Image (cartoon, rainbow, N blue to C red; front, top):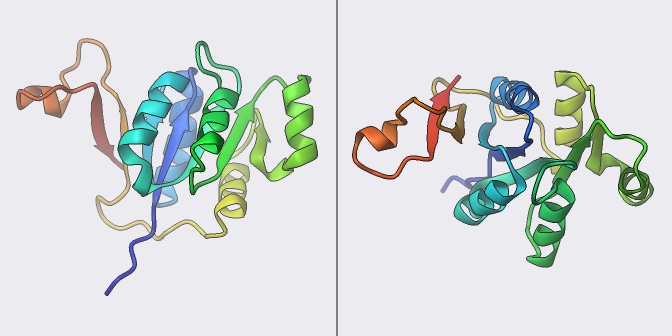
Length: 164
């Protein structure tokens, strides 16, 4: 019997370019990715995909629920996966506190794909899985004006799946 380990990483950042950069690096490394443009959507997606999630990557500063709020909620729920917080605001008290308590749980912007993947490996105690054909995928909010595959089949479709 094959042991199925979680292979999905949630990426929550309100900056679409950062979110796409992170998702693309992870997909190329063989991970599956779920994208969320806000902390509120991140918590919703975590509830829906909890057993498949290996790691959550959240921007600290997002409108509404911040990455810190998402991390606190996951801690309260005793989630079985770590959270990597990312930020460009390196001079905040929150960043200083994270650096003192768990420096591996923070990555400051700008960062490279290699730095991201090193941090992912450090937090998950695992190397990136080997990508297989059509295995790496991203789930992200459907772009305005574009029908998602689920909407075309008459189902609610706030997210669309894209393969690398």
